[in-house]
Length: 380
Image 1 (tube, rainbow, N blue to C red):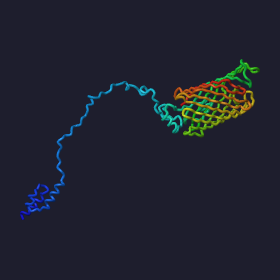
Image 2: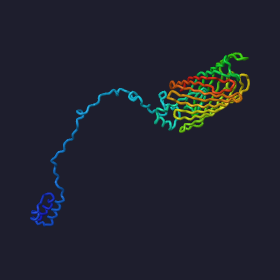
Image 3: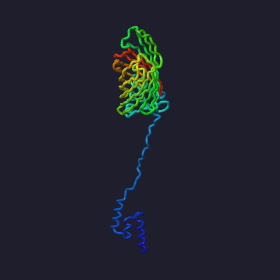
Image 4: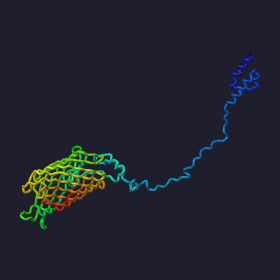
């Protein structure tokens, strides 16, 4: 019994203590147990031995010894415009700063934003001006464009005209009729797509050396009236607009060269605008319905008129204008003239406009040789 107990104790400690085959045989274990132990020893992993070679430390090159910092070139003190003088202007989007705020000057679509992104140096923000008749437009052409709601505009200036025909006959070399008109206009946009203007004119007209007619000089309030423009169609994608203009004019003083009557006349017209980047094509067709008499207390017929204009906004401040204007005075004849001019934006509030017209064809009783228009406009 003591021997068996010792054998059991040794078998319990066999995984811990190393036992040889001789000792196993001594205590009566057979060959099959020896073979099992040999197979188990073969399956044991080999003992781990440390490598005699040590991993060398990483080699870090000395930056201070091999690399030198570049010396200052002066670029740090230059602005971007000085460093890149030919660099295009930064993208400002379809809005522009106005008195510390981002004020939308015009309803714009995706095409306008695309123009600003891909061609920032070729597209300029649109600025509006009043025509000689007191609504947004070119010279004599009222366009279909309407500024943003809340827009207020004043215009004053001088129109100088030299006539070549009067009372149905060409003027002789010593005869003359000259006319100075000082227009005053106030326009505002009370609602979206609606523009209203009120205007009046002071006239200074002089006639000399006419047979049977004494020399005359007329000065004073010539007429006053009101116009309304409503843009009933506006497509931002194609940049096409249509508008209708309605209004009236009351002649306060009888002048020889008036187109229309010295009473109350009514006007109606359709307006068209197509914009292509910085270029605008504008058209107008309308009629003046006469409801009064002329200077000699005689009735005068109605007038149908048309205006075609092109404006090219060369930069942020300059807009070039070309126009072809004509009207048909029915039994009194017709008149066609061409004009060219520009509009110069002095600041966010002040605009100067100047244009000159020459007569291409005239069969009316009072036909003019040339006209010069100059105006000063205030907008806010």
